[in-house]
Length: 310
Image 1 (cartoon, rainbow, N blue to C red):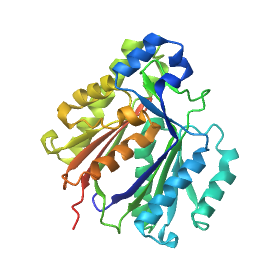
Image 2: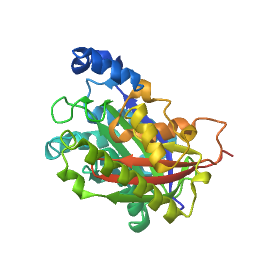
Image 3: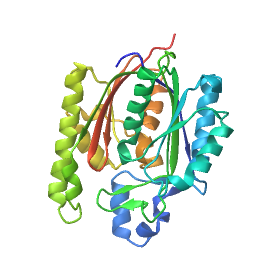
């Protein structure tokens, strides 16, 4: 899988507010105290649409990449919070027109929830491998609407943030991060488990999934844990993130959590936002990073290597 890069990662958030402003937590002092104890402080709330957030992020990515829009062969748009995809076609088309991508047909990725980022990446790599494409614009954008996608989860004790992320996936650009390995694992039996009523069984299945995807990814990549410098997962809370790191078999010192308190859980944009911030550390050169994706029943393991800056 070597030869593909992730670069020019950007993101867009709404207003950053204290989690105490969320009605479900404002009315439950004990819950709020628990969430704060788990490292949560701020969340992103946007009055703009998913597409408006995506447009702002994508503009930054294209400008930063210095690519002419005509050099972008494909747009992959991913979201797990669009309640009606068909009704959003016009908004998506207008967003692409604004980006000067009028002759680029979009591809959608919607079903893997918090693992959408890695499924979208796999689709991008497939396009680059088999369709003669050179550069793909990948966009992830989600908003919690308070109905079908609630702001707060009392099962996993996380707070959802409105956010968009964008980046360039390329086989010609040699900047950013090189993709070393990408693997997915699913367990459809999880859909048969009610996490509120069968919490222990649910946790056991999640734990099995984290262990399985980590070992499978490392085996395929022929890397061992000692060669991994950083471990990135979704921004749920300190307890879950530390547990995922432990289940994956990495030392806690490798776990990246620096933006948990300031951003909370930006759906499937979490991992790439964290990757951008890891990459901005000038002291880190040619590090290998393991990125864990964890959805409702789907896991992904992504290993990337930070490319040195000449």
